[in-house]
Length: 284
Image 1 (spheres, rainbow, N blue to C red):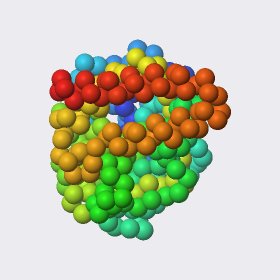
Image 2 (image 1 turned 180 degrees about the vertical axis):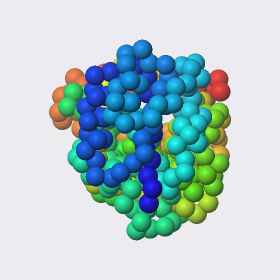
Image 3 (image 1 turned 90 degrees about the vertical axis):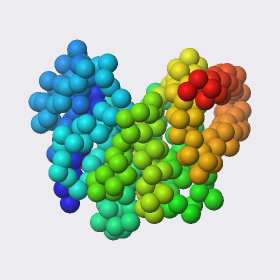
């Protein structure tokens, strides 16, 4: 099984060297490529020193789907392609190997994504979100599971995911016209074709964000735009609001026990998310 690795980058910073060092120690051999949006901090040069091929694109041309598709076409031919984001750190030397192991075991699996653990500096809220989205048990999902998991059936994250290239191409690759959520778009397309998604809990990275309310608002405007534009996903798998409500109630319950004052900030950020999402749905 020939595997490749793609990382979109833009001024990746000091932590990126740690990630590159960890990737060099992985037991899974991969062909490596970064697609860099005109970094000015030496990101591209550093990646080259670790054996990465570098594809440079104009910063203004970056698109979550189209840029990944461009990089994929650059790195082919491959059997499996792995995507990371520049701000992850690998848990151990087997992280990539565990992520792709399922492709040999189950030919119906087209997408595998791993567990994301919170960074050491993660807030309680960020850590709870990681626990909600990335539980300790692995999970195999098919189209029929939408009756159980709703929209979460099509959940995946390109911060740490692998795709069977043949399956990815069969659904048209990554879309070029979505603001965010290119991973969910492809996952939903694959499920509709009778393919399966695997959540590999034993394949782990560290990845979390301590977003401000303003950052949450801006992000959820883009997510709202995506859900309005690709309304077939909500119509097929269920609404985002139901999954969001479940998370908010769980989060507030946990925060109330740990530090009740954290609930105030959490409620404010949740309102920013809800408002951003609704505005995104309207202005799309």
